[in-house]
Length: 461
Length: 126
Image (cartoon, rainbow over all chains, first blue to last red; front, side, top):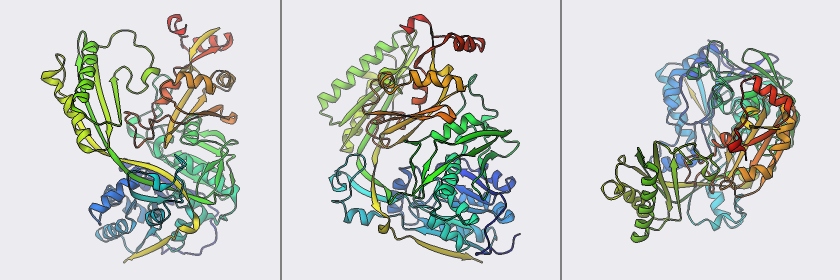
């Protein structure tokens, strides 16, 4: 086991190894454990917050003040922390979600259970800016509509700012073995260890741009190591069921290689790195993160070995003046229902069923803001842009989805589909129905000065 | 001139931000890139994504990786979190872009057919 962490050591010169252990809340548990066991990692990062995850977590916490952090935190930490302790690997994660202090408490308990102390756990707070946004609702403009926050009709339930790497770096300087954050830039989780270890200046835009280019490659986890890529005969992926999650090998000058553990499934090549680099960006010359604006246009991808790609040419420009905020708003209900028809004439029976439901909704005065009807197997994903079928389908799944302000209207849509059995066209499946609340996400920008980040360190003996 | 699906020349991945979808389209070979630049224009993409994209389409070029990035506004049914679609993120749009027909030079057509790739049958082509 390593000696206690030196907090003000000189910048490292060795390669820094950072593993990507998760890319969404419910991601697999064991690939990260394998990375921690065999990857000689300096850091293991779990990114688990999609745009909406944090708002859902805020709703969880309202119901239960102890909850609101990642539900798999205990599963992950019980299996991974013994390896991290053994190998001197620090953990950086946004699994704190809406409750980083709750997540820190639970982590401390796990450390005690496993007798892994002494360890330091840091909770990073300050991303929750709900009060600030409510206080300034007339002034803050929504990026989606250009109108002020106060124009929203639904109830605002959360507002979380995308914090940058700086506050994570501060937590690492305090010697934290585990850093638990809420909302932040996904890439910042990976950039922070680079800044901390190499002593990169936080206004050296070019080096930050290089680091963030590497971070962007792995922030979606296995999406760069074989996930969401396979297309048989075109893009083949070995052992897709056994994907190795990716890791970054970073040098002090910003040279970066993305790789994975030998003996795992998946693939890392130029093609998948190119897909991942462009994924979820808009202008590739101006990819905005809280830490730096990244320019991907000169990036070169070079295969330097099996499942090893060198990433070079990333550049940076000054970071944005303001920070982005995700605002969660309750905006009514969505009702969904599906019914399947099969055999000769199934499409005609499905069309008649659609007519029956439309008429019933009118007769019943069901109040829907929007109704969508899909023929699954024919056009559910691409609508009228779908290629025409060569022959009539053998079966078709008819799907209804409607959004309503009142829950009862969403429920009644499902009920009208349900009563197609017995009262609609002949010979169908038994319908399935489902109602859920709409938690919409909007964005706005706030000044950095509105954020008051705080770090709470717990020492576990 | 023969016409092939874009799938024979390029691969793609799609992602979301709010009500905007973006698709990275990457040429399998550097010498396919000019064909992609010529045929996958915002206007043609708009026509191909009929009923889906309500807003503006901007195309960015990444020549070093032989790729374009198509940014399509108003493409996600009002936004991922409000959408009634089974694919609220538009992740499957990468498959839709690959159904675009692309006119291919004789050389590249021969190269593709040598790999066992077939041009689009006439009937669909018209």
